[in-house]
Image (tube, rainbow, N blue to C red):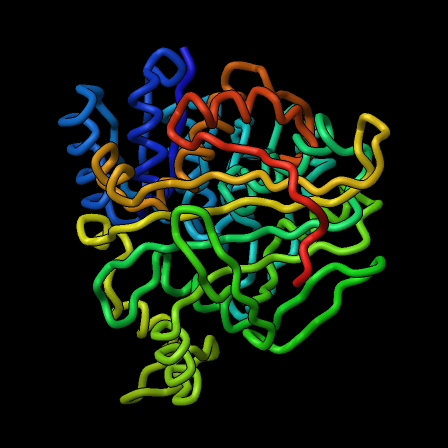
Length: 403
């Protein structure tokens, strides 16, 4: 019997644990731990009410390797699913190495003191995991995750080579708040305020944050402004699809979000360096996180859809010349909430975390070392997306995108 230990108790974790419980044949024993046990207990209660399955809960500091290692030994899981903060990736990987357990996450490591998104720290663990006969799977969320698998499925089934790639992430949901983030505010704001970077002609090109904007008409949502940003899958895709001439990541933001974020930046509330307040050190962004709405609380009020996908242009596999394909998923916020009690942004990351975990515990995806999701067979993952709430479509466009 496979046991899994899920670390973290936010919206993504809630979705992943609910979906694991809905697939008890694959996940007969689920354990959930986070710094705040009451959050784990709330998820476990919801899972019990919705599925009848029991989830065991624990309090743990994911940055305390000895304590985490002791908990892993106590439970004896075959897989640790890291749905905590990206700052904690390395300590959780350390605990997995210490205890001989496979590892999975949805987002790459970043240091607390700098908004820097790179895989180098986790890629450096490859030899240690390989020598231990363990597998670490990086980026089994939506972006990174599904968008990476979308890209590799296109390369396997439609395109011999990929010349250009655009990842388009649209959240058309409305939660009724003046300003709120749809996932962890600290991580969200760090991403948005960091300089934009895209891959072009063998190197990354950096531009000021939010300085490149284009309008795109998203199916199920309508026209939205999307902004060029940096996202970690650009780094791994550039490595594993080396022929790419250009790769870009775009995300939509409403005018109200941009206005509020600009003001917060201007007054210093998005800073991640410490300041002294009443004799104590505080991090302004962490204080801001404490006063913003909890993303998990937005599910009941969010309406609308997400539309996330990839547009790839390259040499057709059938030898018919250059072609462009658009592959995407559309997810409804209200449907996601009805099923798991969470909005679609959490749903679109939590479901792929469950799918990656399922493929690992069943031995469908296996290997020794550290792997990005792009390195594995996309077909079983794509099949499970259709089966578990994230159906996808692919269409041929008349030509490359003009933006």
